[in-house]
Amino acid sequence: MAPADEPRTTGQPGLRERKKRQTRVALSQAAIRLCVLHGWADVTIEQIAAEANVSVRTFRNYFAGKAEAIAAGHLERMLQVADDLLERPAGEPLWDSLRHAVLGQFVPPEGSAPQNERWREGVRLMLAEPALAGEIVKANAAAQQVLAKAVARRTGTDAERDIYPRLVAAGSAVAVEHSLRADESMPLGAVLAQVFE
Image 1 (tube, rainbow, N blue to C red):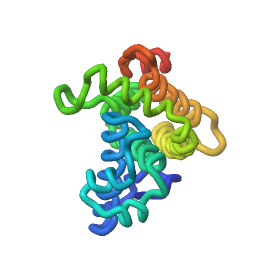
Image 2 (image 1 turned 180 degrees about the vertical axis):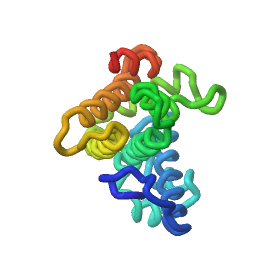
Image 3 (image 1 turned 30 degrees about the vertical axis):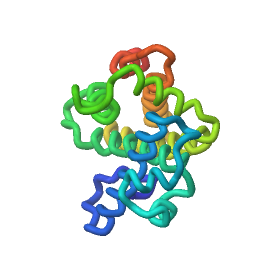
Image 4 (image 1 turned 90 degrees about the vertical axis):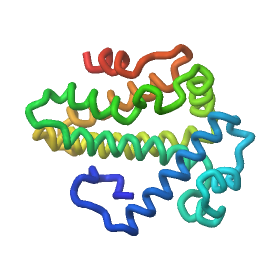
């Protein structure tokens, strides 16, 4: 995976890096899927490794535990938001570009992923797990840093000196988290619109 301080659109990774990223993503997705469906306490690293079709040793090469694996999935999606933002048409307003980039990563196409209430509740409960909280905070911080740099590149500002790119990145992250953690179903598009207003 690319360093957490730059958007990844700077070049194409080699085959080895792509394979490592695929394994990392597969492990993260397996951890999320199993924890959502069976509950945090009822999922082991052995089950996650088996679900991703790798050994426990391979799992440990990528992650220290299931919390880190789950948080890596969130970070991966937010890094992709930064990449997608930079690939949007140059003349498109920032807010439209950002909305498309965020929704493209956090709202699955119709019929392609579980959209039912049980899945949403499982995600909400998983995110409330105290053991996951620290890893999510770290992932959010890294993601906001990369997204702020993408916003700065897009707007011609400086992510280190100007507050605007960091504020936009933080607002986007808050919208995603609010939508995922809400007790009642809150469409991400509506939350983003409210935040961007």
